[in-house]
Image (tube, rainbow, N blue to C red; front, side, top):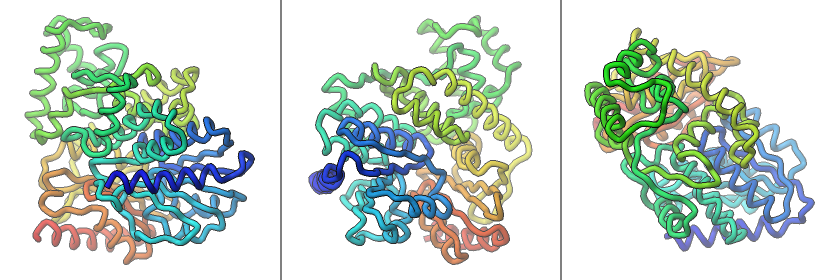
Length: 445
């Protein structure tokens, strides 16, 4: 299977290298950590090969974004971490396009002006075994083997897409193994501490979200005082780390977190000199900048601009505070329910999916998936999150979102465990009823 993927990546590299160094090459990617990492990998590979490029990060490419791209004078457009769900629109563009995606494809054969690289077509599961960044890394490697030093960014992308849950596997693990062997990344088992002080690490912890600790200054002060830890330090002894870990794990167990989620708290973590952060920490930073509207900062960080890191950290702190406010509010006020899913309204479509994912893993039980609903400019943006238990019972949110939104003239799709849709503003109730019907049948079957 991997040989087939390598063959099509080689074909992509041949297409790219066939262009003049003065060509207009466009890179379009998703605005989350995986998409940002994927874009940075392709941009770095293009730059090393002597090409200029113009890169854009998008929330989604359904309407305005793709229309704008199609009107530009591009000779080649490379889509990373997106495109398979919009392939029919991309085929209508006058430029040559390359799609590098891990989301479920809607068609396997494409027009001659589009080359689609989708891991699902080669027996590699796009939910768990490969992501936009690891597939982009494969293309970069086909352009030049010297690009193997981009392996760190590839694993950052997989980390940002939570593909470490249950342990890295498949194509992702193959890259990790080789990168460790070559000394590009190193591995260490550790708890996630994401800030300069233990107080900030606990206060701004949103993933994992510790109910009664995250965002709660008084409870953190009391906890640290009780175990005799200076809240202004992050230089902790092994004994103090064990105390903190035991307490935090107890909080998660009391909330009924799934075992595979509990296993993500202390786990194998990855580091490299060129990244400078633990990879999940770095993915969080990219994600915060991308989803808070600071996409230029996000891509600059991923491309290695060290001077902008302090700006990125400030953006991240503000972003996490907004999420904390919403999570604490939802814990107090609760969620709305249909027969087969829960849902809540969000003021920000970008934050809705993030909040939904966190709430699914750390606040709610495993019985139902969760949808966030945000209204903007006459449209409704839906993000939904499930869990591995529900997927094992038949849940396929990607299908549910695509099926329900298409029937109402909208767009949707994604993975079985996480997906999204966009529909017209007046069709909310009709959409929710359709999704309820579809998911009820999936779980029942």
